[in-house]
Length: 191
Image (cartoon, rainbow, N blue to C red):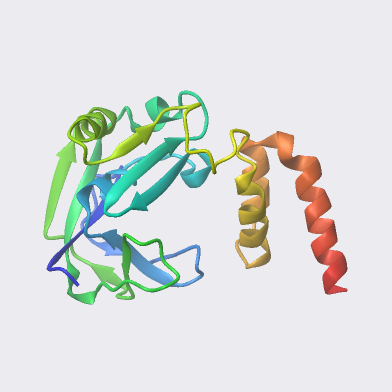
């Protein structure tokens, strides 16, 4: 692993970064060796319910799922923490630019403050370091109605992330009937 990795956060008071339970159900500390990717996690948004984060040949891609979300979650300040990368590794079940450490806690080496994440991301986009799609623009393989989230959140729920479906339906209540139907089919298969 590289010597330094980066951890983005909206919180500037972190003395020690502690392991948290990830979507893969393992306690770990997330980081990346790409500062722009770390910037994408410096907000208090709803994760992939707000945006799609992709990585294509070393280029970060940010896709706005709903109108105004980028302004809402990134028009604020944030922090990037530099960490010693020696205990971090990439695993097949992670997103390509992610690395994790199974250490219980890690003390950051350095903290950098960004007064406006959105302005910084837009500047990086102008320089060709990230591609940003503002709603309703998006790649053709992502449905405009965001229905790609349905199976993903049903699987989260079935794999132990309790409340995942309720969170999905809080943001996208229009999916309620299809989610209920799919969950009923899955439960009937188990019986």
